[in-house]
Length: 282
Image (cartoon, rainbow, N blue to C red; front, side):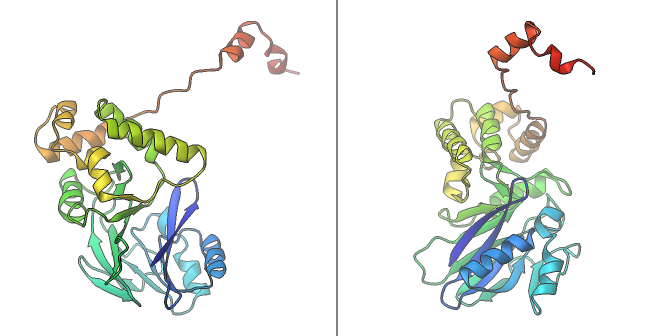
C-alpha cells in the first residue's frame, strides 16, 4: 500500500492510495480532478473508488467530474450532501480493495456526516493509515461546525484515539505550524511542542508536507488529545475533559497569529517621506 500525498487548493490534501500488486487505486477527498488524473496517469494505476470524508466543497467538489470521466467509479461517504455518492457507508463498516482493507469510522462534529477511513493490509509490516479529514489534524482538530464538544471528545478519545498508536495520520489540511503555535500558547513548557514547531516551520519553508504524523506523536503535542493533562486544565480553568476541549476550541477559534514586525528600514523610509511620491495622486 503506497500513499501519495497531493497538495491542492490553498492548504488542502487529497490522497491517492495504491494497491501495489493490482495497481488499483483509491482516492481520498478528490477535490481537484485534473491534478488527481495527472498523478493516476503518471503512476499507471486504475482509479476504482473515491472515499470522501465530508461534503465540504474543498474535499468533495471533484466527485461529479471523476464519476463522469471514470464510468463505474464508486464514491463512498456518509452524507447525502456528498456529490456523486454511490455507496453510503456506516460506522465500523469494512471495505476491501484488493489487499487493502478499510474500516469506516463515523466522527460527526465538523459536519454531521463526517467519516474517517482507517486502512491496513493484513500481514504487512507497514503501519496502518488513518485518513482523518477535518476531524483530527497534526497538532489540532476541526471546527465544530455541525456538532458539539461531546461529539469531538468521543471522536478523539474513543474512536480515533483508540486506534493503534503507530497509525499514520493523513489529515485534510496543512495547518500544522498554526496549530503548534496555539499548542505552545497552551503549553509553553512542552519541549516536544517546541521541537515539533521548529521542524514544521522548516518543512513549511521548504514547501514540504508535515503529514503523516502518528497517533503516538499526537498524544505528546496535540492539545485536543491532552485534555486530561494538568497544563491543559490549568490553561482552560476546567477539569472535566469535555469542558477542557470546549474551551480549547473556543480559544483556538479566536487565536491570532502574532503580527510580523515591520521592517525597520521600511518604517524609517515612511517616516522620512521617501515613499510619498508613489502615493501622490496624479
